[in-house]
Image (tube, rainbow, N blue to C red; front, side, top):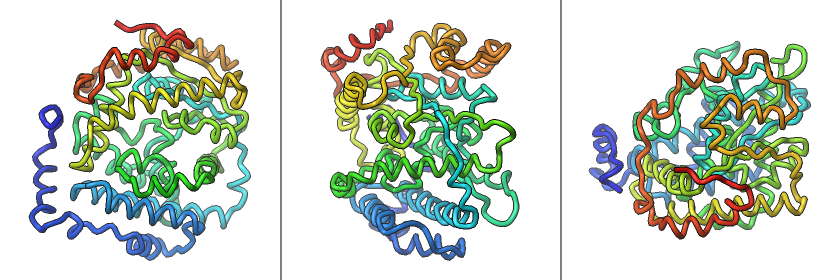
Length: 415
């Protein structure tokens, strides 16, 4: 894999500073109590969450420190992100205490775009977000939702957000072939769900087996994460309505693995479930998850990511199918949409989704969709290169693993 993915020279040299002194931990320590003290002193605030939140935080950071094999740069990112998340939690809780009506904001019939990774969920999110009657979280506000001081410092917060997602492309340029990383684009829920250290963001970036072992015995954590998801949307929504509130538009593949908790928190939600030929998304998803780990650690394991992509996503998709069939989650509130239709005729595919959602199609919206795609052609940042062999995947075995999924949803084979 090192032949396919290499780090820019500046990243490689920076990481060598850790080797030069015997450990990157000597330069970038990950002490949870020290980082919490910094967040509190830098904001002048104290209430960051209850004891379970603090236990999740301490255990997650300790596991990153001990288990992830993070490079110097990986540790720097973890430290910076954790302190920023703690500061944001402090500011949010202060805002809620000062104005309890924030947490009374109604979040009605949110639309979730979901599916396995690499099935078109990102571009569909962006296309749906072109509708002025829909509201998607934007990357900069997912990272910095609350002013850092008195007054509106929106431009300042937007500039700060560039230092996170957009930096990822500087560290690992191949990521831009997967997703355009910009602080002004609609973003996945995973970025603001990171405010809870129990959420999947942290495990996506770092191997944290010590934390994972503990969290399996804490079934309430997932429900708490979705409660935090709602509070975040309420905070963004508060005070910005003119007339009728816009409908929330949300997305992350991880919602499929916690679909029961999603509907428990949002019983009136609608899920647009994207479907694609697994022969096209399994190895690509393995590459994506590997790259996220490789960006931060020398211990990233491509074979592990291959196994998780093949069997983990198959289990997730089959479980959602079972829950829908049994009525555990409301089958009528799913809209199934094939990736091939979206790619072959985007405006028609999006309009079909509108019809299934019972939404009116805005006048001239076909031109809006086609114009957006004209300025963002597929492959704009190069081709995503990967092979099945890179991740220990056998094509025939993958085909067999996903046979039931393909059959049930009539997923067309891609050439």
